[in-house]
Image (cartoon, rainbow, N blue to C red; front, top):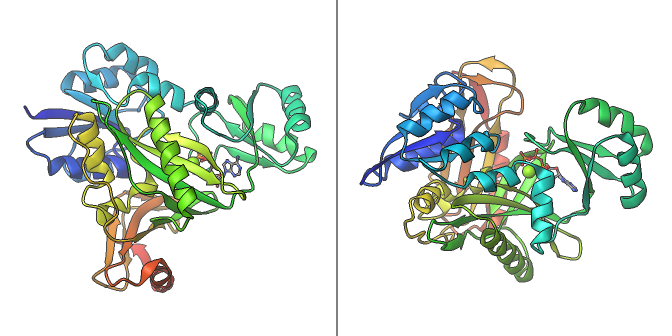
Length: 380
Ligand code: ATP
Ligand code: MG
């Protein structure tokens, strides 16, 4: 029987989940999203919308009453409220998994307890503890907010003791942790899924390039050694075994100078570094997520054509949509998110550049450079 799907969050991830659901009419009859922004990206492509804050208890309850199955596209949902609703409505990934992941300290502790390698870390509750950790772990260190961080906004790199005041001032009132700064060789990620029957599947490891802490480009598959590829995919597999709950997870990792894998963080949802799957694979990460939470077979997650995903960031503060003009080629796929408000560095769309002519990653990178140089982003 066809189900009604409720999604907490209706941004671009909710939008692409909605589009995937619209191609699964037999399984999903309707999508309802909960999002505070009127006419959010998911609503623009046909999802019904409850306009409310992600953490609003009454609205989450209402969503659960209207839905057969609930999932989320953000990790800042209210896991306590979701736990209470779990008895009546199926929720995936499970609220307990969300509770652990949405607190970076609990997440790292959980990984460490399960024998999965992470950078050295500790929670810090005051200046004294921070100073103690600087003595213990050495500098540089990253001071991180434990919750509600995105695009690196909850991170402060402490290079010298004179940075302590500024770092603590920036995060007044937040719960914090520190982490040893990893002088990584590369950042990679694995998009992994587990269905409600316990079947696990991963896409090949990809390489992520950041600028100003924001993901700028994903190269799929990543240019890594066979050892690193295997290790990253094994770590992702192991992580999925210990995490309960079903769905797609984005697992961000560092490759250290000596080719070891450390998990940076896990997102309990579809992930920006999985957008390439819209063109590179037969099953996109959005469809995979729906298949996972519906208990369907996961299917083929191989990469059919190497692809580079390039994020389009808002050029300036603007109310209204942007148009993106780019060189038209048959291997270039533009996806705009229909956001009605933009700020500098806000993700407003992405472009997938697919290797249809066997030019290889180096060839695709040249095409990306050309595309970037000729991209025009202007108000609609
Ligand atoms: P996102 O950027 O994925 O939205 P976020 O804001 O929660 O997530 P993190 O993923 O913790 O932030 O960090 C953002 C970036 O900062 C990482 O992708 C990485 O480049 C850098 N970073 C984070 N932790 C470390 C570390 N321990 N050592 C070195 N660099 C780090
Ligand atoms: Mg991150």
